[in-house]
Image (cartoon, rainbow over all chains, first blue to last red; front, side):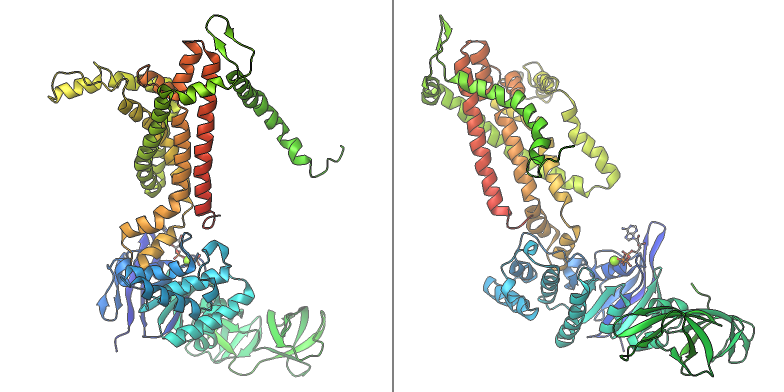
Length: 349
Length: 287
Ligand SMILES: Nc1ncnc2c1ncn2[C@@H]1O[C@H](COP(=O)(O)OP(=O)(O)OP(=O)(O)O)[C@@H](O)[C@H]1O
Ligand SMILES: [Mg+2]
C-alpha cells in the first residue's frame, strides 16, 4: 500500500552542514505523527520542507501519489501552525481565519460564516473581533489552529504549537488538539521536543537525532522497546548501566551479575542496560540486593528516590500510597519484574 | 543622602534635560513669539506696542498664501515621493543578506554624512544652466536650449527628496524588522501569492513605519531652509526662506517672527492631527 504522505530519502544541507540526512517515512491518511528530538536535530527543517518553505537538497516528498517536492508553498494547500503562531497582527481573529478562504475565492458572507464556525470549534467564538495582541497565548494558539484547519488541508503541520503555553494549559490543549484531530480525521505531523507531548498525542513517533531518524514506533512500543540508548534516554527517564556479558543471559555491572536476555550479544562484549525508574521496586524483602536511600523527593502522585547499591547509582519512582516513604539514609531492598531491563549493544551516547 | 520621594525622582532626573531645552529652545521661541506681537516702523524700527497686526497682515496677504501653499504642497509631494522610493528601498534592504545589507545601508545613509549645504550646492551644479543636466540633454540631442532646474519647484523637490529619503528608509526599515517573518510564510501557506503577501501581510505591518517616516519627512520639508534657499532662491520662496528674507533683507523682524510662528503652528497642527489618525487606526493593532 502506498502511504498518503511519503518522504523518500529526504536530505537538507545548509552549506556543509547536514540538517536532515536521508529521512524516509510513510504517513497514512488520518495518522498523527510526531517528530521528536532534541533542539537542533532538524525537526523544523523537515516540517518546512513538507510545507514548501525550504527546498530539499535531495529526495522526494509525495502527497497522495503526487510529487510535491518542488511545488510552491502556496500551491500545496497544507495547514501550518507555526511555533510563534505567526498570526497577522493587523487582522482580527475572524479576519485571520478567513484569510485562507479569501485566497481560495470563497465569497465574503460564506467565508465569514466558515471562519466563525472554525473559531467556535476551537471555543473562541466570543473573541472573533479581537486583535491578536489582545489575546492570551492559548487563545492565539487556537486562532492559529483554526486558521490552519478552516482551509480543510490534506495535512496539518504543527511546529511546537504548545511550547509557549504554561504547563496546565499545555496539558489541556494536548487532549483538546488530539480529540479535534481525531474528530476531523486530518493527517497531522507534530514537531516537538517534549517526549510527554509526543507520547500522549501520537499514533506513531519519529525520534530524530542529529538529522537522522533514530527510531519510528508507536508510543507504547517506543517507551517499552527502544532500540538504542539514545531513544531510551530521551523518551522517558531511564537508568543506563554499563556492563559486559559475563555468561549467556548474564550481564555483569560493577561485579553484580544481572539476569537479562543477552540476545545476540556475545560473551565478553560491552553492553548498556536500561531500566525505567518506575519498573524498579523498593521493599523490605531481605532476599534481594540492598540499597541505601541518598535522596527522597516527594512529587505528589509519586516518590522519586536516588539510591546507591552494588550496581551504582539509580533513580527509582514509587507510587504514593498514602503512607510515609523512605527517608535519607534508610536501607531498602531492590527488585524488578523479569523483562524490565532492556539491553543495548551500543555504548551510552 | 536625603531620600527623595519616588514622586520627585523623575522630575529631578529630567531636570538637566528640561533646563537645556528651556534655555536653548523654549526661550528663543518665546522671544520670537513676543517679537511677533510688536509692530515695525521703517524709520524707527521695532515698536514696543502690543498688536496682532502682523498676523492679520500675513493671514490676509495673497502673497503669503501662495508661499504657505507652495511650502505645504512641496511637503506633500516630497513626502509622497519619499514613500514611493523609500518603502521599496527599505523592503529590498530588509531582504538582503547581512553583509550586503550593511553595505547598502551605508549607501542609503551616505547623504546624511555630507553637509546639507555642500550636497545642495552639488545639486545646483547639476541643475544649473550650463551644468551636467544641460550637457547630458544636449549630448543626447534634446536641442541646444539649456535645461535648468534651478529656481524651479521640480528642482527643489528632487533635491529635498534626495536629502530626506534616508529618514523614510530608516523608519520603514525599523518597522519591517519587527515583522515576524513567519507571518509571511503563513500567508504563503494559506494560498496567497508572493505579491498578495507583500500587499496584504507585509505592507500593512510596515504601515506605522511608513506613517511615522512621512511625519518626519513632511516636517523636515516644511521647515527646510538650506535646500530651498539655494535651489529655489528668491523666485521660489518657501515659508522658511520668506521668514529669513523678512529678517535679513527687509529687516522687518516682527513680520519674520510672525511667519516663523505661523509655520510652527501649522506644522504642529498638521503633524498632531496626522499622529492622531495613526494612533486611532493602529493603536488597536500594534503595541
Ligand atoms: N537557514 C539555515 N542556515 C544554516 N543552518 C540552519 C538553517 N536553518 C537551520 N539550520 C541548522 O539546522 C539544524 C536543524 O535546525 P532545525 O530548525 O530543524 O532544528 P529543530 O530540530 O527544529 O530545533 P528546535 O527544537 O530548537 O526548534 C540546526 O543545527 C540549525 O542550526
Ligand atoms: Mg524548531
